[in-house]
Length: 412
Image (tube, rainbow, N blue to C red; front, side, top):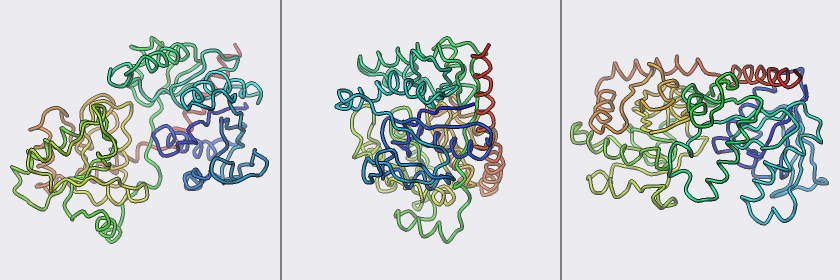
């Protein structure tokens, strides 16, 4: 088979869809020596992508497609596994980022796939083309805009979601990342179960327990003491960060330990509005503002901060998969996690799972882990065991099986 992959999110390699694409490509290059792959994008691979691609350990060179030019927005000879082809959208569409993305997804991308002569076209995020002559596989990580009204604000977003929903209904196969997401897709998009394949994600290979010396050095750089509760995963509405601050304040009244801090990865000053509720006034009102630290944790420091945390807390209300708690588990962290949506599938019995809207219950779970060293040690041990059950190698093998199934389906 010749397999085309929509590589749009190589332009955004640090977000969720970009990380999924990078890890999947890396793993496919390791497990599949028979099929031919081609990455299709609307823009050359820019200079800003070099670190992300190189760190993903791709193995053969990416040819420059723009006359050998280099620099911002230009193609670079990066170490990647598969050839990359640029098919620019028409000039009129380049004036607006959203229009450019839509035209690529619905017109230029499918045309590039046909021109490349691929046997199937994988769109690794929720935006398959409505009309395509090539068999389509689409990865739908979640259907959050259909489930949570705040995530589909505006007529343009509603129209776009209707378009991609109709397109997904016509796809040959749908890949999703949890059984919960599968059920959501069946309920919301009315796609039958026999056309949906659940393939779990995994933490990256870089997420491993970090030695104490490195942890201490990284902690000092972030201004964090030895006892800290860690949260990473975004500050938007469904992440429930205000509730975490309330539970932390409740915990502080019970614990009587002035050294315990809450580290929240992110900067609320940079994200304003109802979609990103600011936790700082809540912390101030409840008297814990001096014990809550807001610092964006860089990728290279995540393993150390996961490893050094007294516990990692993830109170999200809705996830398609929920990668941060799995990353934390891969680093041997003790985890307290929401019991909503897909998260029980991810953490299993290796975390304390609680109702994320129950402030006392969330605070009590955190208190148990902090004061019971045997529980904390047991959770750390179970975390490593649980995380080992997920791997990108397995995900790639199952994705390859989906490719083969889609190819056979369309040939019938």
